[in-house]
Length: 196
Image (cartoon, rainbow, N blue to C red; front, side):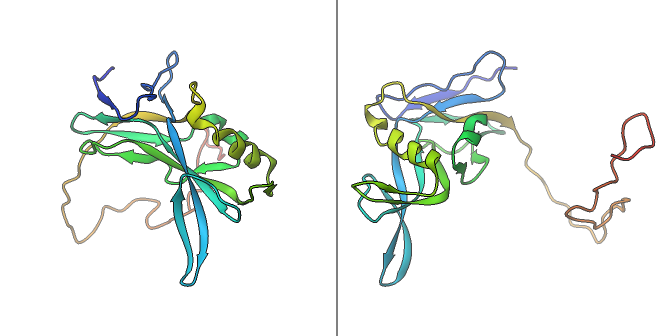
């Protein structure tokens, strides 16, 4: 089923998200980026968003501006997720999945954190990860890169808003109050009595 979604470009180089064949997720493209760095101050360590790197910067992440905003139908949300190729990089999407609510009208962005922080200097890179270094060097030229890379993917999801009914007791189940890991070994292979 297809939904008509209104989309606005916030940047002249912005690209409309693209679906490939029958994919569930659409690819989003970065139009520009900022660096997320740590700085030591008299009051302790702070995180800042900066346009340019300076010697001594400790890079902990990259914020990609996707150049577009959407107007979603009621009871629809947009989830922002990493692309499967993220495993090749030392990056993770900070709040995965990101959630775009139907009343949000601003530009969509995605913040990725490096698994290992990078110490940057103007002369060279003091780093712990070769892949992370390549990432920094490549995206320093993002503004001049007309064919900006797809940096994340998004999926439109329907949602229901709950109306809560407070009760004294919840209906009992076999699992009960068992939490993390409590169902390990209890799954059964369909059509058999054998546990997984």
